[in-house]
Length: 600
Ligand code: AGP
Image (tube, rainbow, N blue to C red; front, side, top):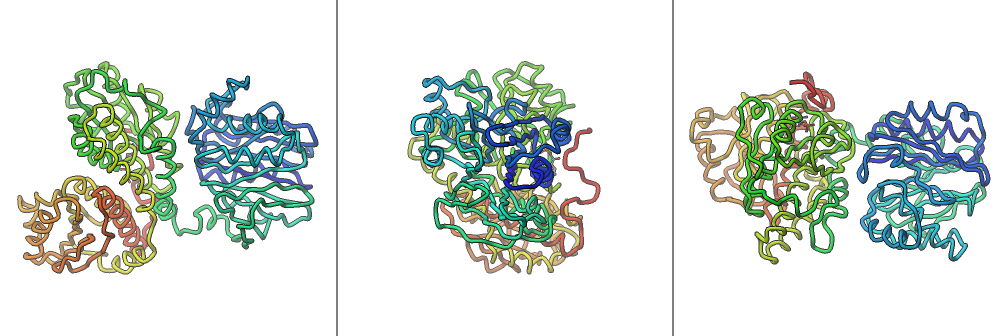
């Protein structure tokens, strides 16, 4: 996720902005920049890579005085990480920093190009500042021009804009992505930031802006264009702030899944259609099957998507663990679309599998969270998951955004191949659009998993069982538990238990049963009854009460199995985390694990 900072006051603007961006580093970024104003003089500095590079570029002006400034760290979603694509973006006399995604940037850009505007970056952000100037050039009223600009934007946009047309002010607006405005401890001082960490120590009172609220600030006045705001007291601990008040980054990342999945769908699910900026229908030209390679959690997301590609797109699909694929002397044919799925884009086995497919002349696509990673540079096509940086080693929001991208892709392919009726396609898209809401953590549910976790701190092992897409979900639940609690757990197709594993059934064997209403419920139920009959301890997760379960986590009654999938995912993530917390483990940095496995 991008980071925004702003300062207006009598202190050292450059220093405050650089320190503010430093506090936002935890959000992940690939470039950074500043715009500094003194009256009508504007100086802009941008750098690729780490903040140190920006600090190096600004070291000679560090003690110059600037009345105000805006700064930005960029996590690339539209356009590669380059200096040109780094923020602030400029028009003729204005500069902007932006966090979010402008869904209708293409239409706006086309119209402005026709009016003679020149663009130098590949970003969606750049259209905002040109749109602002296009309007202001006609009405010569920056405040009204800012308001009119905002009214024409669709999507998620939290922005700071400075302009020579109104040189002593910062214009701001919040929609989708977070933005805070704070009153500085000194007089005539205001600060902005995407999260409260950069503000701590510099301000006490702040407004956590609500969606649709904006305004303009000068040394004399903070003007807000609506009355929908309240002043709050900022936290005093930066560590607490970086985790948005959660105990661990993993917990923060579980809680932000609804938001990042919304970002992931922005501009892709629109007017009941699925479209990707990054690919077009020719990607399926000459393709008869899909092969997916991945590792770990990404492999589980890939497995779940195989059911969707075959069921919805009617394309044969198989999924392989990358470390196995590399050495099996695979048969590769160029009617295969080769997809790799990876949060980091750096996993050695997955990268090598991708290179093998590329060298064999296959069409390749990577579903990835990090732009400009190795895999995005090798694959013919990239679709970014837009999950923002994932700090917890145990993957959470990466999995949910990967699964959403792959579900969207299966529907996109279904549209190209007309493999689904219009009604069925609409039903699928309707369900897909509800995923962000389903991923919002219900506090009662979280409390339930916290209470239950005390019962699952020992035992000689766990089986996580499910059918269909709930089998990969069971694998993912088992991996989460293993990774952060160090307890032994296995994911298994529930229909397979009677082919051997049921020999382990006894009260010390904990079975977490995924029992969705909309997918083979009766089949799973009978598998679970077999286990219960042998005195296995059963925790069932289901919208339907199951009298034989020793523990029961009730989920909501949904009308689509994939909505049950995402709701059960959150249950599994929270349960594993709460067990790990009780065991006193390091939830964010579990023993023996690395966030990205760049070696074989
Ligand atoms: C998942 O919780 C783990 N962190 C691990 O299995 C991870 O999914 C795997 O190493 C693949 O990483 P990637 O998605 O970055 O390729």
